Image (cartoon, rainbow, N blue to C red; front, side, top):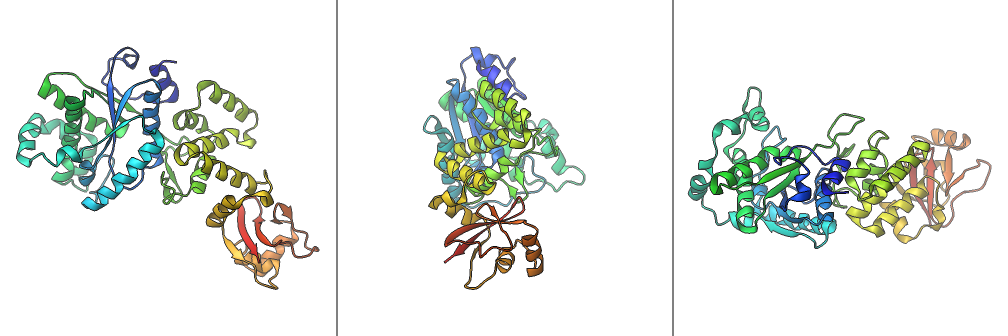
Length: 410
């Protein structure tokens, strides 16, 4: 499969200034892809673009990753309906270190990383206006959707600072073209306009040609909304912001209609593997083979194989596929961090513990659950006539299919 064929198959083809996507198979390009350190972690939205980058890497393309130390101090207005709060230099520095660490996790040492603050800190304001601003006409800038929406009737307005963002990003492309021979920017669809600023600046200042290649916005087919958010908000790649367990569960719970697309976009599984996996999925949707593979592969990519194995085993245990009593220390630690956790008191009855864990609102309700056989301990339904069901150490308490707690019996 050629690069253009794989990009097409994975769903990474959107707009481009190239005459044809097939030009990628026959022409030599040096590429760059950028992320601003507006936070100390990328999200799964950024991950989609990163997976496009990895596709180019697999086909031997030379790629430079840009961390926007300068643009991060301005804030990209694309897709925003209000002005961003400006970050301090210390905040930007902290965020840069975190994003670079995630770059290395995703791409290893195979890419060249640059920071646009390294060249912008030496560019004077008057110099920038003369050498860059002079080459941009106000009319097409004001017609860009994200600018027109902000400054038009009912919009929140836009400061000159944010309005200047597209010129700064355009200069990035020009600088990388001049200093490193980079002639293709790859980006998400929301960066199409900003990327064209670089193409235009390069043409005006050098008379030479550069190009942009963008991927489409990832849409959740079940909701019709932009993909990448859970009930708790954005899904982060940093385990301190979205735990490995919650990250895994997010992928495990994606809808049936979209899971085939996500396997192509967010994993490095090949066409044969995805085809076979989806055949098994369609034969028995209840087994959720596609979602399980997706959750494991993405978690392995972002958090490493060891943590992916731990969370896969933990999840299998919760749903009765593995024995809770055989879990190791790390698996138990993950469960204690994610589930309600209680230490059983001497003489405390089962119904009281069920309430303390939040699995029932009252002793009466808990007793009703127990009598109905809706309570299980360590994978075994509790018989109301039997003795106290907890063993010494950690125990898994479960109500129904999806309500869990850890009970420690000293």
